[in-house]
Amino acid sequence: MKFAVIVFPGSNCDADCYHVVKEVIKKDVDYVWHQEKDFQAEYDCLILPGGFSYGDYLRTGSIARFSPIMNKVIEFAEAGGLVLGICNGFQILTEAGLLPGALVRNKELKFVCKDTFLRVENDQTPFTSDYTKGQVIKIPVAHGEGAYVCDENTLKKLKENNQIVFRYSTSLGEVTASSNFNGSTDNIAGIVNEKGNVLGMMPHPERCAEAVLGNDFGKYIFTSIVKWLEGGAPGGK
Image (tube, rainbow, N blue to C red):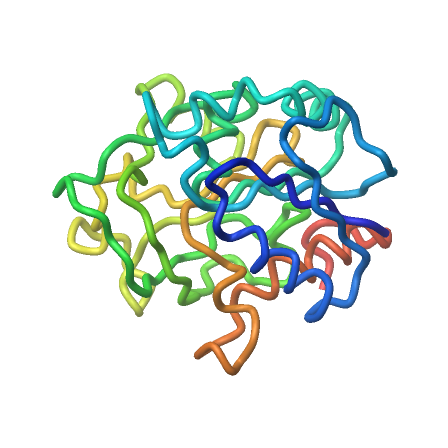
């Protein structure tokens, strides 16, 4: 089992993701530079980390989407490979068309860095089988353009296909306007594609994958991936 962390100029959470895979879940992992046109090894999961690729010029993720490695990332995802996009990685995935919708400026037009509560909406994905539907988890955010938006038809499809994975909530799991700090459509914090093999989320699970960081709720994104790759059915406990 092997992971790859795709590194763009301006990525700043690549080392965090690498650390979680290498030191926390104890799996092989490589950095892959964005200018590569192909992978030099066989990978089971690709991680697009957070940061400010290309300085967030134009739109977040809009330049990184055209990095040479992205053709291979798209090919990998379309073939069913697991892809996890975190924060800027989520933005890149929407720009590349691997996930619907877009990420825009927070409703207060300010960068937000804090712990947030998420309600798990779907525990039947390769990324969430170590959670329970309805579970409330605390995951930090750090973004200025993190409001997920989509049109009514897209939102309808996301709901029908159970593609909404995380919603911003209160500590009690209530999905409220006050818990929707960035103004995301329907409090959405993370979604998967129709096949369920590509997850994009704005909160940072790699920043809370060890108890020494305050909690380890984020670790279970990664342990769920391992379980799925080892043959455990999504949602299997």
